[in-house]
Image (cartoon, rainbow, N blue to C red; front, side):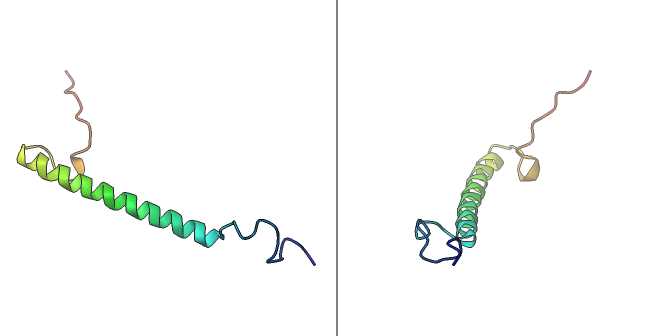
Length: 67
């Protein structure tokens, strides 16, 4: 038998499958994006009250006028 295909191969119990690793990374990414969206939403409300830009252009740097 080929040891690579055996379920009782040494170290196999500690390794995650590719699908499990991808699922974990997706969950981590989703949590990070939700936290980022909440932070942007909270920051956007404060910026709107102060008269700042909101929406997709809020994070863009302002270019200096060319003379």
